[in-house]
Amino acid sequence: MPAQAVERDETTRLQRLQGILQSGTLKNAGRMLNALQPGEIAHLLEALPLAEREIVWGLIDDENDGEVLVHLTDDVRSDLISKMDLSRLLSATESLDTDDLADLIQELPHTITREIIASLDLQHRSRLEAVLSYPEDTAGGLMNPDAITVRPEVTLDVVMRYLRRLKNQIPAHTDNLMVVNRIGKYLGVLPLTKLVTHDPDEIVAEVMSLDQGAIPATWDDGQVANRFEQHDLISAPVVDDRGILLGRITVDDVVDVIREEGEHQFMGQAGLSEDEDMFAPVLISTQRRALWLGLNLITAFLASWVIGLFEQTIEKVVALAVLMPIVASMGGIAGSQTLTLTIRGLALGQLSSSNARWLVLKELAVGALNSVIWAIVVAVIAGIWFDNGAIGLLIAAALTINLVFAALTGALLPLALDRMGIDPALAGSVLLTTVTDIIGFLAFLGLATLYLL
Image (cartoon, rainbow, N blue to C red; front, side, top):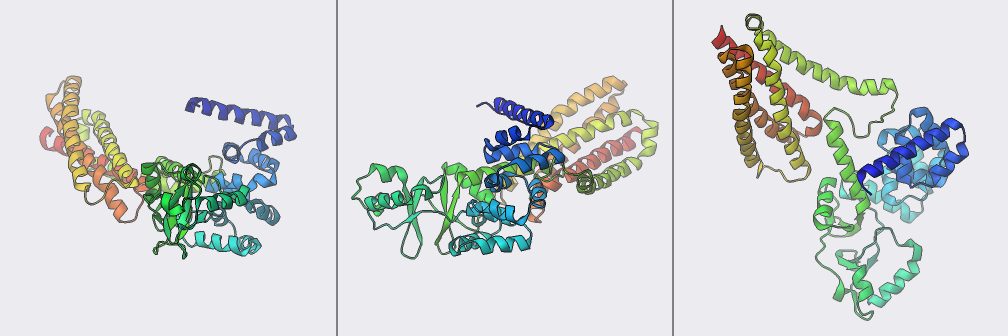
């Protein structure tokens, strides 16, 4: 279904739900909601104001609670969890996969976490503890220890009979069986396609695939997403540093990683979290955004201070005040283009110290070429506008300087922030704007002071 059709369907569904709520027929709203998939319910909840959200949450069947909570953003999930009693929380976690339970349990108060862990049997508890022992944004934190394992020496007929006994216990997204030795060391995979198309008397070792490498549990989620993308995987084994199979990661978890990374890049440019609740209380939203606005104010004062240094120049040549925004704006746009490209390279693992030099040189060349092209255009327009060729030449020179500096900053700034452990997506845009504004004003007004007065 085309993206526009999906968006229209979701909008229609939201409008229909709000219409039912306004009419007061809550039973109809409940039936509509519980006929949807958990992800669809979560999407609707996030699109509702707080009062309506609380009503709708109360209409969802208890057996759907856990899956819906997993699909919600952190802010919305935390708000709903804070209003749930212990019995409902325990019920919500009963049917969750281990990886989803691990994600959810970290959002709960410690007292409730202990209750949930105590309610698990020994096998499920040990699996949960294995996932929780790794950071959330690593392969170990993403994995589910539900992989079906087989030995290399058994026949395919034995494997088939084993799967028949499992029946409904076969995990979702099972496209391969994991082949391990007696101590649990990962050896390869047995694709289900080979299992059903080969002679039942053949042994696993004869038909297993050896070309699917395992993912180390310490890999970060970005590396995991790259592996899935590059190899078109549905599932992948996860191993510890000794090669022992710990579990598997499935494509649905990787889709979540990719979505969250995209939202992080987009929201981070405005200083917002990807988990920001659109309908969060006013005071909470104000508090979160105040720090970012304060940081922007500081950078704005820095740019204003630079302008203030040339106050006398601006008073004598009023045209400078009219043209200043052009220099700053062009530098900001050019720098943002390079900044975005560099951040994307870092996020995809395509940029490192080995090739960073080539990127910097390439972006400098692009910046220099663009600066020449647009400096000529702006010089002609400014010269005609103010009937002053000198002003046209000055803005051309300032524009050239600023675009080159913008390209250099856009390439080097994310690399420097990443090396310092600071998220470039969050801090890069503010710092870049500061640099391009200051360099642009300093170049333009400084040259004007030297040559026009």
